[in-house]
Image (cartoon, rainbow, N blue to C red; front, side, top):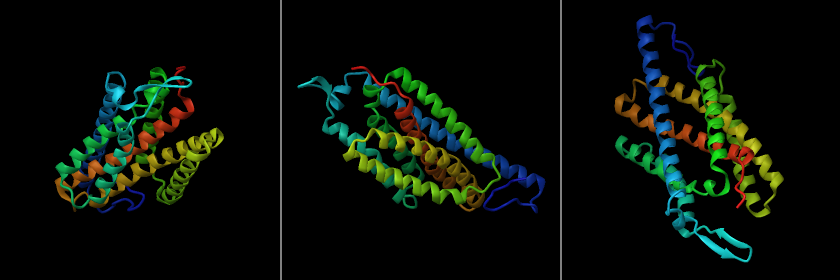
Length: 255
């Protein structure tokens, strides 16, 4: 029988209706995960492609300093770093105004822009450790998302606590931009991993509950657009979790 912690079970639904509804939910969640995985693939391809071709010189050229040669961030690199935030704002503010095709196109552009913003990780960390941390992140994300999908515990009460933790991380990160404290950065990374792991379970359950609430009200086109926004939430959780684990577990380049 279909179940949601927010809305409970549906005891009056027939077995056939419940089976159809559950099949629709599974198909919807698969669509969300496919969008997220495709976005991550595009992000990885763009980041790797820039970092391992001459395009890297347009973002982080080698310049001579009093201590030797070092990569220097250009204006293009700074634009790439902040561009994903602009796309997130457009997608968030235009949730009711954008067409499905426009939301999908913006999602692809956003994932490509995110890839360009992550080029510098190939300059800081070894490629072997990047791959290793990616698979650690994938395993952590997968296990947590499965828990959020299957658990009957209501995770909504955890949502406000996690959002408070997220705002705390943002404030602490801004403060550490000026203090450059390695101890504070380590604490931010540890707390961040906990927060984004929890948000993964919370968002997965929220997506499942929203399907139970809006499946028939929004129609096929509405469900297609909603799947993009739901994929974006999980995508951002994955990227943030990956970056935090990379700070904790990644091996830095010697140069």
